[in-house]
Length: 194
Length: 240
Image 1: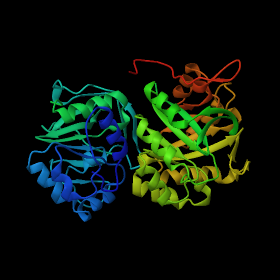
Image 2 (image 1 turned 45 degrees about the vertical axis):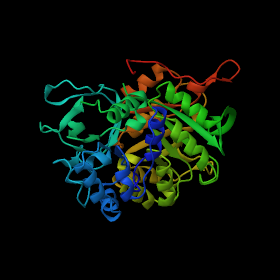
Image 3 (image 1 turned 90 degrees about the horizontal axis):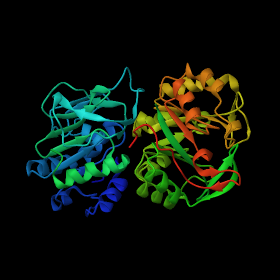
Image 4 (image 1 turned 90 degrees about the vertical axis):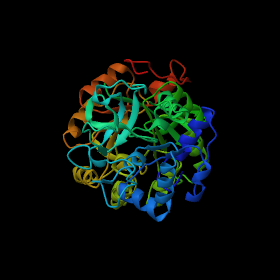
C-alpha cells in the first residue's frame, strides 16, 4: 500500500524479482482484493499516523487483520502497528500491544547500518540472522513480551522483528537489505517466517 | 568495523569519476553501476547530482536506480525544498543529503527531519584543505560560521553528517585524517567521510577515528595505469 510515506517502489521491485505479483494500492477499499499486505514506512510518526487515519487506511487495515490476512509493517510501518510513539502525536493501528520510544538520548541518535539479529527470549528463529539494514531513531524497546520475535544482536534493547498471529513487523528495511531482505520478504509471502 | 559506501556522481543523467569534484572520466549509465554495487554487497550508495538542475530531469534515472538497487541509497544535489526532498523519497531513496541549503535555507533541514525523520537526513560539508568550501561556487565559505552551522544542523535533526575532502577527491592518496580529528568532537551523530580513500587500510584508519561510514568512488571504479573503468567492491570481514 502507499499512503504517502513509504518506499513501496523498491519493495515491489524486490517482490517481482522473487516472482510474486504485487501492486501499489492507493485506495484503502481495494485492500481486500489482496492475499498479503505490506505497509512500508519512512518518516515521522505523526505524519504516518495522520496519513493512515485521514486516508481511511486504519479501518481497512484492521479489517484485513481481523480476516487473518498476513500483514507486514516495515520500519515506521512496523511501529505504526502499535499503540503510539514518543516521536509524535496520533495513535497507531493498535494491532500489537507495543509502544515506540527513542533509541538513544534524544531524537538525533540514529541507529544506522547493517546489523545482525537474534531470537528474543533465547528462542531459535526461522529468520536468517542477517545482516539487515537499519536506519531509525525510534524503536520498540525489548521487554520480553511474546510478540518480540527478534532483536538487534549487539543492541538487545532494540526489537527487530515482531509478530502477533498474522501481523508481522520488521524494524529493518528488507528492500534495502539485499538478498537477506529478499529472503525475508519471500518467507513472509510464503508463510515461513515462523 | 564501520560501513563502506560507494559514491556515484552524476552530471545530468550520466555517471562520471571526478577529481576535486570536476568532471573527469565518463563511467557509464548510473543504474548499471549502482546495480553492480548492489550485487557486490556495498553497504550503501551515495548518488550525488552535481548538475545545476534540480533532479526533475533525471527523475527517470533516479527511479531506475532505486528499483534496481537493493542496498540503502542516499540522494544529494540541488535539494532546495521540502517538496523536492519528499519527491526523491517517494522514488525510494532512504536518505536526502543537503549541502548548499545548509547556508541558504537552514530551516529546510528542520522541515525534512520533521517530515521524513532524522534518520532520512544527512548534512554535508565540503572542505578544500582546511577551509569549509562551497564546491558549487568554487570558493570558501565563512569559516566563522562553520561550527555554528554544524551544531545547528544537528539540533535541527540531521541524522548523519558527511564530510568531503575536495582536495583529496579522485587522488587515491589517502584520507584527510587531520580534518576528521578536528571536526569529530563537534559531531554527535554518525559521521560519513569521503575524499582520497584508496584501500581498506585507509578505511580502517577512519573507522578507528570514529568515522561511522567511509565513502569512496575512484577506489571502486578506476583501475590504473590507464584509468580504465572497472566497478568492483572488496569482499571483507564476514560481510555476506
